[in-house]
Image (cartoon, rainbow, N blue to C red; front, side):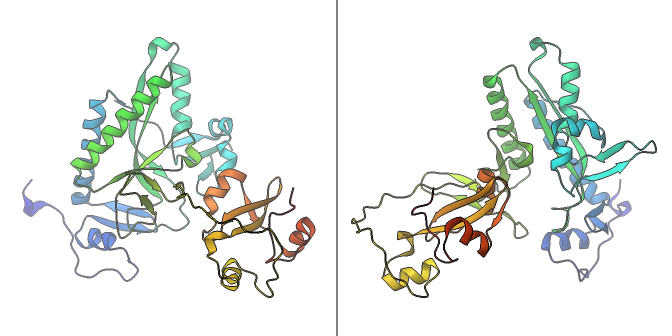
Length: 335
């Protein structure tokens, strides 16, 4: 095709509701057009770029012996009900009924469908290992679609699944995929980091994600220049440097009108790291007293992984469970 025939509808102005630079550039350069919140049309130039990226992924999946398949977007509810995720996934799943009244959903991920196929077709350990992947449309009813095509309600996802006879085979395929993703991102010209992450609703004993720095990004990662440790801040752990503290006499200290760690630390002339911050929370199984070093803040998602859903205790609950007023909570005497 001649360049003169190529449809590239460029614009000079950026729509007033566009805030992300990447979205503005894609719109003005004629790569995409927005149909509605979180819904985009890929115009010829944008579609060419997307297909080239897809081909890079296909090349690298071929290198590790993965086979491409295609699964439907529309799923019967009973497959999701078997795993329990029909009940646990919230409003981000598009749900509907067919004309017979049967519950259905639009796929936001395909673990259930992929494992259904494997259970039906892989009849012997001799069939293993198998690595299947797809590049398929996914749909999620995002509460706040944003960042142009970065966070949308309909998007393309490349998802890959390995079925192995043992843990050793699983580890091998995990590493093969990690290496393939490194090659994919390098060929795509991205600066990226492989970091430890939260498996979330996908589950699993170990999880990594690849992060590309972007002004439109919302996640934060931790990188240690000394040891090379990298992790999403939601799962990052740290090693506290050993501190030799002089022994202090255990005694009650009057701290009038000082209810925060910072207030008490200033009053006593100590650093906040020398204190324990105590927070009473109410979880699904009752009250939980969470203890955090005084100069640290509570990380809701990390705590949620340990105790499940929770909320801060109300004043009457603090008095009932601990017998003290808010601002004077501590672990001494708590069973």
